Image 1: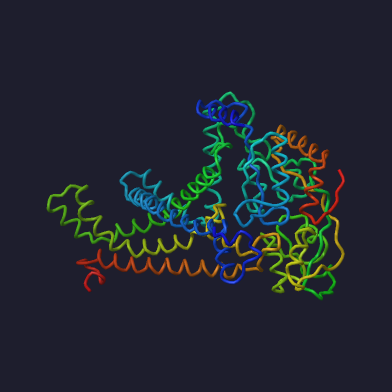
Image 2 (image 1 turned 180 degrees about the vertical axis):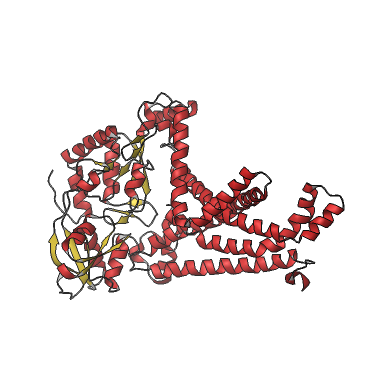
Length: 243
Length: 287
């Protein structure tokens, strides 16, 4: 460890672009979507993806720095090189795959669920539904016939249901479960869960094939030895996923 | 921070608040107020410099320079601020990286633009990928500062240009009759009197600048708005200090902060205006 730091410093000092410089990468996340990723009370990135990311970086022998970025601009900023990966609960979709590349999934496809004020029993297909901008949920609602209201952050989508602007909110089940539990009965799940999107993968620039290969190998490794299964169980209320 | 905060689930009432308000995240929030002040202090000299350069360019005797001055002010003033704020940092960042790429990695054969990606060699990254996070943040902040300076500099240029034109011609002619050179007339007569006419416009600009600082948030700088939204959001049981949606409270704090800041500024500018208009042949100077 000390030696690598020394070497990196030496490489920096002499201005030689050596291979060791490529060993530091920046991990971009949203930091507003517990339990996937959030900024904890100490002001640091925390959550399921923080632990997965750290485990992957250790396996791939990369030095990772965590940075947060708004969801809206998370893909443009990856493409323009502000950070090297997106690890932010991003489902693998064909649409996104045209712009960036994805690693293999580190979280299985998860149904999305609706949450509304407790006691709501309206018809969701004609309702006003809130979702976060540029998410699989937003495009699902837009094509389903329901009225879509979009918000920049997950927080605002839930607030829209609370203040009556939307009848329901559609988001990943794990995110909403926490919110429902914390609402003291004010909010409740409603309607049937919908299966949209593939699993969650790490977004990487299309030109960055080397990093993609490294991460794919690391993901295969944490799947094989059960590390990933344990992390999913830890952050998603004991959910069991077999790899 | 305090010893009794070791287990947040055990504290309540006042001690809960004392723990809650001193979490690492809150310290970041308090520090981000300094970011706002840093932005204001850093941009003002640059804005004035850009403003003077623009105003003087517009008064230049050389046509191309005059065109440049006019082009700068009308372009920036005619384009919505937000578009400029989004454009300048990205364009600057990619421009700097492109130049460094040409300089440091001239043997690189692949194109810089590959499909959607903007790819430069590792050594040309700005800042370098291995730089600590604070370097990245400072760099982003400086790009934002530059965007502010360019936009507000154009407004300042217009104000200063107008103020320079408002000084009575007789003053300058008298100075010339006394045998002063062009430079002397500008420094001793034109410039000092100009301030009385420029100050109302400049103080207005300062107010707008204060109120525009939350645009930092738009540029990804973690300023007070970022932390207020972050802290105010619903905190579920995953957090040490769970609470419902408190964004209203946090934004109220920002409201009071900005109101206080603009109130103090107004007092300051009133004093300054009184001082520079003393003895002037304006209504402000006769009272």
